[in-house]
Length: 249
Image (cartoon, rainbow, N blue to C red; front, side, top):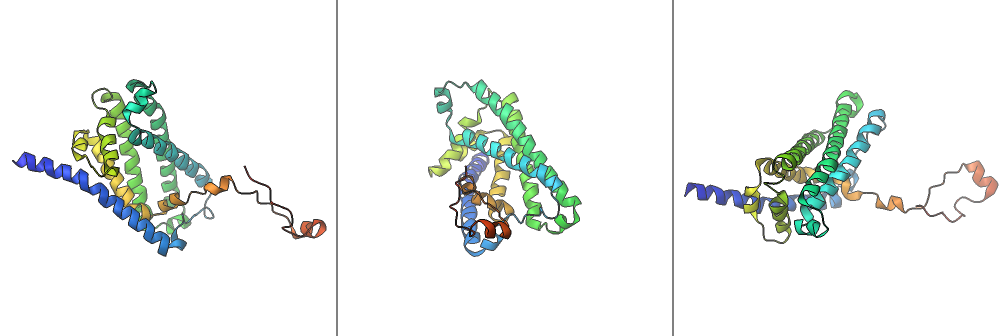
């Protein structure tokens, strides 16, 4: 009876907690956008130091972009779809290892450089809040746990355990309002730890500088070019702003 009670409680955890996390993330993001628009920013510290930032920031952003794309493919795309495209399980796990692991390492190195920059640069360190420190710690743990899942799940358990039959199905069941917590109990412990850290990260997300991800400057790719002219040039040629702006990309 005790064993049954423990299993039921564990299943209940994986069934209910995701909705709490989604509620916190959704409500907090809405509240911050409505009442803290001036705080909706990365609080850039580029003026204090730029050399390390020029290296660490691109590594973190481009690496995390590949990591996110990998998670979307692994969690949202059913296994039957990849098989229908002719991709075997071995090829799928191999590409996850070849692409996912370098992307995770690049992201982790980028985070490490940004942390080192904040710790060693006096002005940047003074501009670092408690939320920033907590965010960096949880983000680093999530990256390490994710790479452990990639290594262990691909090399040691690639044939015996396929996370697309447990973790991915459980993840999609959350959005269909039919959670399958029992599937998460079948996943190895390192997958469970990774998901638990992800819960913490998403719950913290609206309260940190990571919230700026929801304001990605997509319009930047399509806006007109910005042309800077001196006042002398404007006086000699034509009134400023009289020429129609050229389109961007």
